[in-house]
Length: 183
Image (cartoon, rainbow, N blue to C red):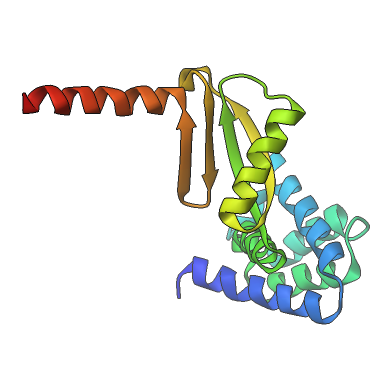
């Protein structure tokens, strides 16, 4: 079985358990914290993935890093993963959990690219439009890319909504080129 499929199964189990125990918000916060720790310290993830490092050492390090910072339920889940030899896909499991949690709560994570910093009024207009289109609540991660000239590009999962000036100019260019060829 691929690591992705295994990660999804563990993530689903964590989600179902946290919903049953009415602790989805707490576990969600714990997962966010753990992902942040793993992303900010790539050496930490490399250590977890290293087959030479003994499980006891990995468990000890995870105890030091997480035990006092996360809920008992989440820490037990991490300990369980280590006992099953799944610490090598911990990051994947946690990312899958976040995706499943957002689906459960009707939340869409949107990567919003604009040519300049947008003010709160503009951001709210974009948010309302995307929430209607997606029929979900929207959470933005923002980035600036001057090459799009104006407008915005919103990426949601594998879909891209391109309302940039650059895209509009490219579409006009195609129409002109195609129209000129027909004459």
